[in-house]
Image 1: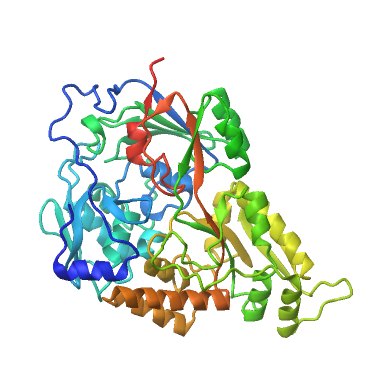
Image 2: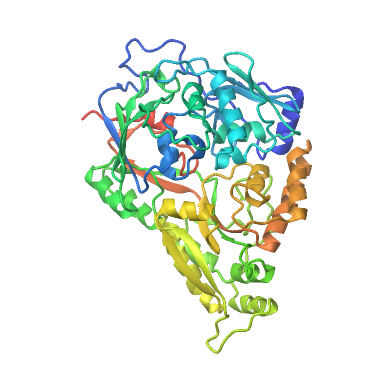
Length: 549
């Protein structure tokens, strides 16, 4: 159980959205009588293969620079996180058993002593310290590095085999939780000789992979499959041995093909969320189970302010009022989504949620007036002399549908939108390059408001897709990151959300719980929030068991 100092406890309570918990059960002190016997419902770690469908290939085998969902799903089976997450966003034990602050400028993690890399090397605090220092030093692209703004470079030190301490540049009550959850721990003896963690491919070309998770990647057939074999032990499952002998990720072209493969028994699980229209259909299908996954994210559109037209507030406001959000939620989402009030502070974050921030009304005439206020004159055809390119992922079936509705409703306001649907990995690369006018997509987990605002709205933020740099907003976010008064933190974040809403630095469209499906022949899955975790996180996959047949 986590035992932060009194000062740390006050800081954590002040700057996090929810009280943290750290009460996950520890593995039994003694292993099962044989390596084959598991205590999970009497299941036996045998020869079964669990086949999981995905629509994307792995782009990065280095978990510190992962891009796609498949990157995350595959590498998480090999490289553990320090912390996991509950459905309300609070953090819980994973590799770390205790975490917090020694004082306001010193953080720590206490980790388990029973994790071992698949080549026989123990996973120790040295690996954790190396990972933290390397990410800060080498600046790999991605969320992990984006969380480390207040982490002092090269400050992480293994003060024992199981304890890491590190320094902060200023008080930051979100840092320990967020890098603990978002960052994977990598093996120092493998990554350090390879040089920069920002450029190390970790593609297995130098003799394969090393894993401290339940599975080890052993075979890659790009465009077809990724095969992982069970490791000798995994302390986070009952009995200490993963149950399925093998995990195979099958790459299929789209969700419809995935559903057909699940129905035919070709795959056992669909990793990505089901389109809402398919949920009820699959619920009534014999031999299949549909599982509800708590949502901690949202769908949104972001307007690239590097585009001269989109740098104008009135144009962004016109676009915001040119989308019919309720129709999108009812038609595309089948009523399975709710409004956030166009605010990045979602209702699930109850302490932070501000009901006074209201959703942008769908009003084409207001949009036309705003465009005229910005200096544009519509032609004889009723269209303004601008066209905006909206980027979205073809693998995202839901966004693909509502993108068309956004185009159609914007046309009613005289605004032309050109749709550009791309294969997911190309979409991510183009997003990171800033090659879009309007970005349409979703974030799977937005768990801590202060951290999320830093990443989304501060200059240089890893997901600042608007490319906004607003001094007033920057100051509010900075204040919220260091205050030790919870009520003040909430007030500052609400003020920041008001600015985001008024200036349309982000257009949050809805939040929703998700649904995934698996064969009824398999059970034992453990549900975690978001599509990134759902039922395909390491502990869940390693605990899954097939019915006797």
